[in-house]
Amino acid sequence: MSHDKPYAGLRVVDLSQGIAGPYCAMLLAQHGADVIKVEPPEGDWARVLGPRYGSHTAFSVVGNLGKRGIVLDLKQEAGREKLRQLVRTADVFMEGFRPGVAARLGFGFETVKALAPGIVYVSVSGFGQAGPLSAKPAMDPVLQAFTGFTLENRGHDGIPHRANPIIVDMSTALYTHQAVAAAIYAQRDDRRARFIDSSLMAAAANLQSVRMCATVMEGGPLGMPTSPSGVFRTADGWLHLVVLKDSDFQALCGLIDRADLAADPRFAGPAGRSEHAEELNAAVAAHIAAQPTAHWQECLTEAGLQNEAVQDYAQFVAHPQTEATGLISWLEQPGGDRRWPVPNPAGAPPLVSGSPAATAPALGQHTDEVLLELEESEAAAAAEE
View 1: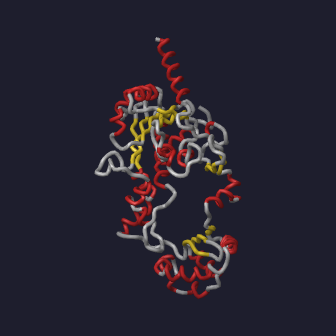
View 2: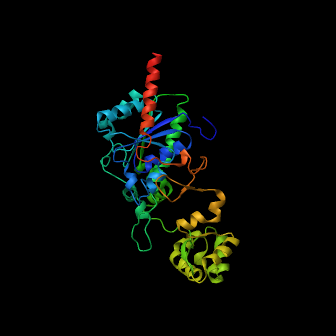
């Protein structure tokens, strides 16, 4: 254990696939844990989800940095026996099967607990361990729809839209990592095995806590909370503007030379502006469209109003603010000839290209290494008896 690697000496056996479970395990690896990624012979399906670069996709790189990868065929007894040996050395066990599948393979909570009495057992599912939908397959877009996010994300066309960034998967990973960290800390005083039930449904609901509570309490969809706010077209792009306080509104009216809006009693106070949001936004939009984005960024920022240009990922990665904070590490990966722009996880040491922590394993890359370690460990234990 060290200040930079507080989980050094901790072993995680990661059977999860996709990104929700794997990204959680990746965060444990970045804090020093020895994370062993167990894949079936055909590999984690994340390896074929999207454009491929060598043996990887963006999913399999981002979700598996810092891990050691092995292949075990759990449909065969030989593979299951090797996994049982590995579980006996583990502190954390992670699986992402639908409820009941891990138990049918012989690695349900009770079985794993018998092999490793102090294990932190993590199960990541779509809808949770119980209920009429528990056995239903579910990925990020399905849970966006089920939990209300898609409907809340309606565009100006009135059509519900999913968010392309995998917000449910990634929030599941973060909530799960928080739960695992708390369980590991608790084991300083209590070494009993613990079962962590994590699901995409639970993460999606918690991610939307404020909006969900407010909407249910109001008995229906919420109106625009502040106005004039939102995304506005400029002469050469798009700008997001947020106007919260009366002083913000007065300042904006001064910038667009619309004293009549500032004096209009309908727009006095946040409630009035929200009630007449459509008319007010349309009036402001006409002025913003007449000037380029940089013009508005400069004058709005000088006036103390929240604003920012709407950027794409390439612009964000190259922005001086992003570079100044060291947020992005450009990582080389075996089998590819291009570098990956990977955000450094908050609180973990920065990723250094070429280091073990910044490298995602090829399929089965460390199988021989890990199995040899198990043999040597068992031989040493037998010699001591």
